[in-house]
Length: 227
Length: 227
Image (cartoon, rainbow over all chains, first blue to last red; front, side):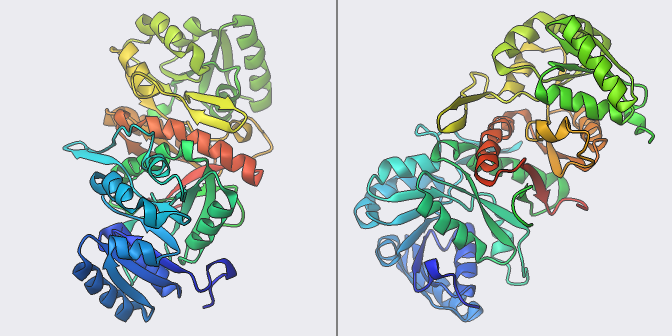
């Protein structure tokens, strides 16, 4: 499989790449032929996951701490837990300058009744990233695609669209292409950064759907293109 | 076509039934065989729309002011503009007591960049309805289904799921059944009332999708049942 021209020879870093969502995305990106750098708080855990994914996918996967991965990636995916989101981005702002940063983080709380959306001062995790990274181009994406399905090599294609949010057309186009390389997945432009909150928060609803229907649910947007 | 048992002989009121979303829902409910009461601020406009929809669908459609319609409906759909939402529900709380109230209202603002979600003190329109109607059972639904498609009789089936939100299983089950009677539409349980905001707000994203792709977009939830 050959990569689309806009992604060819691009190194993609996945910060938080040893967590479920990051690991699943890294697996799919590597399987599609992208050069992937796994980032983690622990460089050793990143290296372990990288070795595992390289073997599993036959792709190029390396590992480093989050700062090293952020420096190595031309496109940087942020898939860290919400509780460490702001702190990490403050630290990495210099190294992320000039890059496209793809935020996948869902600020959710959990209690006995399930998941619920947390209030974020900036409006959303994506907008927080944009505020903390004034010299990067921040895009929101991959919020609602099942981590379980992403990380399961037995799942050949994932029945899900990815809503891509951002204020810079060139960047959202590139991230739509990045989503498109995952088999079954389609990147769909989903609006500006100011409308990221509800896409992040909708993951709480999908968790409710998953409980009720014993599913790994995803979203499709109808009447757009050729699903 | 025969109605599901839980809806048989039930009168459904649609408050704001002369607006685009309300009128489209009323049309589909009448076409499916439900007895529909259109409510509007103006009883005369409600009667006019009712007469038009009765002719168009061959169904039973009557009209009244919103208070009269709320009294006549066993199931009451609220599809009024957000700016009149709280005021109407405060007025109608006594007549809505003991009923299932289905809130479809999306609190959105619009500017040159398109639509965006408004902040609601109670969290969402649906939660505002629940707060103002303590003796009713409030369910959120029909937020994301295209008003244009609902109200177009040339559209035989609408490719969209309806996320149904609520804290009372019997009520959400009934509203899922109500969604199911619209051809092509499927009601999917989408979580508790506290997770209604993002479903309402997501309509802003679908408006962005519609602009970008020149579509009448909708949502499907994947990996649930048999789409």
